[in-house]
Image 1: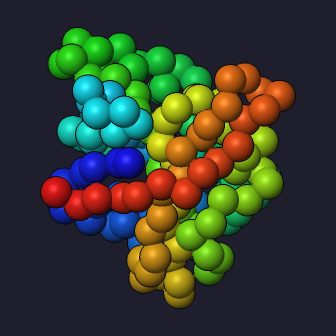
Image 2: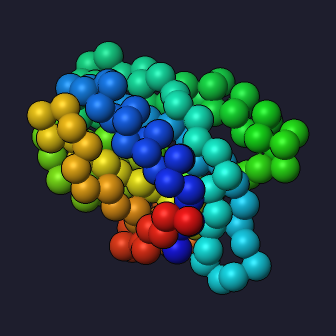
Image 3: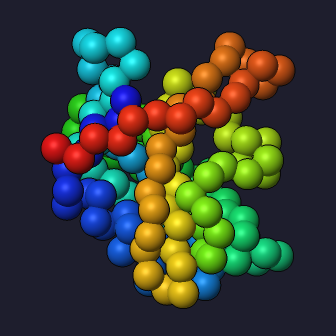
Amino acid sequence: MLKLSSLEYESLRRHGEETYPHECCGVLLGRFTDEEGVRMVTSTVRCGNTRTDSPQNRYNIDPLELVRIQREGRERGEDIVGFYHSHPDHPARWSTTDLAEAHWIACSYVITSVEKGKSAATNSFELCGTDESDKGFVDEKLEIV
């Protein structure tokens, strides 16, 4: 389960609207709670989509930006608990590309469908498995707190 505040939830949805018709992307910082499988988001960080070949249906976060975000988060006691991105004019479901490019096992991947510039559905998926050979997305409850 992924828990986040209404402020963070609205922020990531607004990010998708602002970058439409391109995909937005960002990092979810927070903590892995004592409850099994529960991640609590304490902040979201907007990232630039570095994809130039197909930014309307692909995203990439610069590895140097990701390292910086992780370091700054740890200084505040936060871990990377997930990522978010948008699907312009497509459902808020993961694609085969999303799965192929997801590598953070036990993290959440939040997808917002942005239809004609307006945020619609937002869904969360946990990346499960032990390594690249058996990873897969599982639907995850998204709770606004």
